[in-house]
Length: 623
Image (cartoon, rainbow, N blue to C red):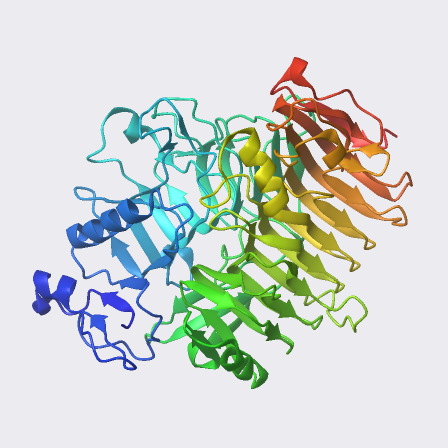
């Protein structure tokens, strides 16, 4: 079945627009379209739906409501979907378009600029009510894996009553990005205060967006990068801003706990699919910027290069890896359509400036201990919008960038870039990996990642002490991120629950802007959580030999659910040298276990006498 392109010539009629799906014999493709295909329109597969502004709002609303109903509880499922909007206007003052976004769903505009696609209405995520579907445990703590990008939203609550009319709600946690947005006409809330409590939310990411007044609410940690905000209401534990016009001042840290950088040290916006004024599809690849501030599209098209869609191999989950690799070897780029790809040998990215772009949270799952994605240390490679899953046979690594003893030819002006690349070790199934992300190349930019060893899931994740013990033995991941290359920058590094050091930084001149970590919930005993003679493994480790490293805004959290008596000596471990600097770091207790110190024996204990009350250090070393 081909991509659904909905809209086009109105004379086709309402029923035909919704029902024109031609099924064909095996080995051939069908189509779902209203009117003739646009010139150069690619076949993006059956899980991509493209809306045209000529389509009635009610029909678009019905399709998106049905999509949300399928995906709202499909946290560990295999559904992957992208809903793309052709340039134009959607929704009216009287009949706004209200979109709710579920798991593994991308909602994006196909304009060259965010203002080319306008939604009069809302695009929202609400709390998910757990514990039997009631309202006693409604949270955003597990609202993962969704994408909103490249469009304009004129907030219109017509048809919504009471509390729901008060804001555009985006109540999310990790592995969720908002990019290239222009939101106006109403406020944006990063928590859902309309649903019965406790209403917790646990972190997210905004980049390259122009935004109204923002209610942070219960969001524990957040990174807002290269954006414009009218105002920001409050903070919880760890709110970080880089290159953002209108960001709050951080002079009072930790009251409130803001970390504000006037500019972003290194940035590169995520590639995006767009349609030009002749109906031709391209992928725009933004250029890297240093010392940047504000949105990239304020004075016209985002600087960079455009690649016609014909230069991409458009892959589907059924395509063998050897076919994908042969296309990459020929010099084509790779576009992964939505779905789950079983990867028994590495997808190999070897040529400079290659783009690997996933739509709809395309997911690569390791088979038989494979390394699903192997990227050479060459300039300009960009990997974006891809999730990488461990399989039940241990993989040495899930994504390798550069060889540890290989040639590292990436360059400062054209860094290898990973944008919205997410990792799972367990969750939908038992997973095993030594390391999730290994960066051996120099001059690499990691722009928003969530590297997660699953603390819950659908298989091998039974509740209670025995279940947690089983998880510790079967769902194994030693390290989340290991950085061996020099001059590596990370903006938005979220790493959680690994069984040794969650992050190990061996390279020189590393820079991190926002680090968020939860230590593993499930060590059965203190003996299982020992680093030699040291109690526990720090959530963030800079190697002893490193002489230059900078972290802005870091948090390590403890919740030893399986055994609350367990101790971790330090949240952070770094060498004591003038070139290694930590700014605005903290530890916090989530109700079980203890972190004895923030960094290197400095800072009070985050224990159960101060649940939810962080222990902060303004800087380390203190002078």
